[in-house]
Image (cartoon, rainbow, N blue to C red; front, side, top):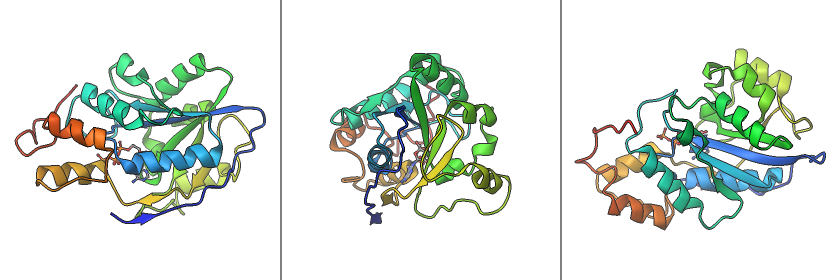
Length: 232
Ligand code: ATP
């Protein structure tokens, strides 16, 4: 695993807005490539908290390898020691396809005074124009784009045009702005972790130890279980 550590510098002009992070993912499983960049975003943007929202049914990728209950349990274990990281079951409770626009609408109802900061890696942002009702997402939240090893922000095309129009260095409005953040670069993915387990290689240091214990206790991602896709 390649690591490059970033030094946090606060970038948000708070404008008396309480900013909260919204971090959705498949988390199959959650790993330090999610957790360390999330900590950077928390500090750099001065967020009061980050909601970790495991999806129920991903809409932009294949079916997860383990159940939503198991993915949720791993998220809970991973964030247990960081009080600013909050487990959020919005998408699990709603069931069906996990459209972020629906999740943000619900969060706006629950936290009307908060500014929502939707967090995503550059790879996820690259597909943003395919997200369900992406224009409406920009009326509900700002987006923090986390740098990720091997991934670049687009410099041509419609997404580059969107960046040119909406990219800022500091969030100054409650929604519609894009900001890219040089978070700690961990060349790590859930795919990589699943492959390591499948081939009986250690995953020490790649996920929190409580998550690692959960994976081994429940025999997740092992060769015998691989290929048995879990719809939920
Ligand atoms: P998989 O390998 O199964 O595709 P993943 O590791 O990319 O999974 P997801 O749960 O799909 O993890 O990602 C949730 C969010 O976290 C996405 O926005 C993704 O871009 C971001 N993310 C995942 N890993 C990293 C990383 N190493 N650095 C920065 N962002 C990351």
